[in-house]
Amino acid sequence: MKVLAALNKWQRREFNYGDADCCQFAAFIVKELTGQDYAADFQYNTEQEADNIISGCGDLKNLIVAILGNPSDELKDGDPCLIDMPIVGQIMGIKLGSQVVALTQKGLIRVQDRYLVCGWSV
Image 1 (cartoon, helix red, strand yellow):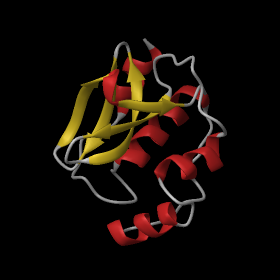
Image 2 (cartoon, rainbow, N blue to C red):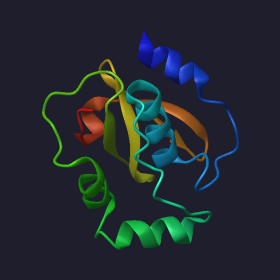
Image 3 (cartoon, rainbow, N blue to C red):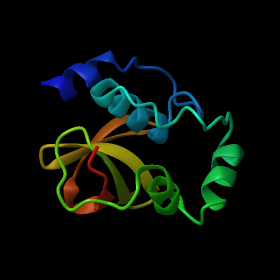
Image 4 (cartoon, rainbow, N blue to C red):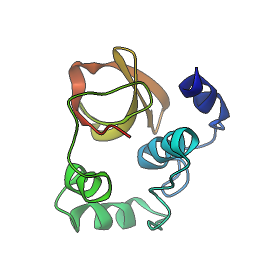
């Protein structure tokens, strides 16, 4: 229920890098659940700035590993996840049952966890 409460606190707004993007969404949910703000050290306002941060670590998975450590095989609702979607590519979301909820430029989506690349237990 805590995860659903956190999802309900997420305010719907236009997709905007550094404010309302896939990583900020996942970080918001994690902060609501744990009190830990893993995104505090990352400031960016454009897609290019976000890409620069990601490419500085090689890819999105390596960036998240640098922040959260190695992925976990045991995931629970609310844990941050990396998914790989056709056309969209790799994005961050959160585990919710057998799905992953993520924020895209078209809004929140729910996808089956078959698109799950890995996740981190927090």
